[in-house]
Image 1 (cartoon, one colour):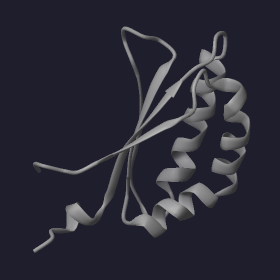
Image 2 (cartoon, one colour; image 1 turned 90 degrees about the vertical axis):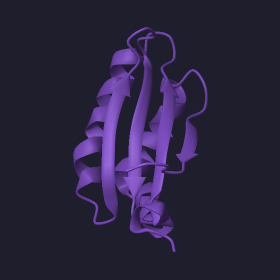
Image 3 (spheres, one colour; image 1 turned 30 degrees about the vertical axis):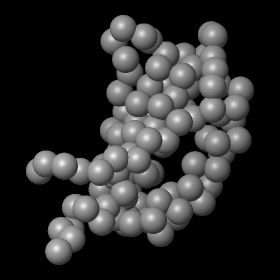
Image 4 (cartoon, helix red, strand yellow; image 1 turned 60 degrees about the vertical axis):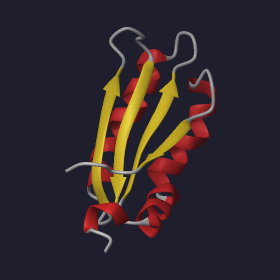
Length: 103
């Protein structure tokens, strides 16, 4: 029997700022938080920055299902971020999907 949390899509997005772009990237990521959390399919959207590696950001994300994640990617504010992110990132965004093991 699959429990409710196992159906959710939980991921960590890893974003490494290009040289000199740390603050701009941070501001662009922070700007995504409020509208994303307002999406009906969003369950979690929290930004972190590595203490020992400033400019490396992790966005902890959870969406109800694949349709909710697809809807997020289609939002104009996400599309704008995606279009601008190439100039802000040292490497392509890495999206790591996770399986929840404990509660």
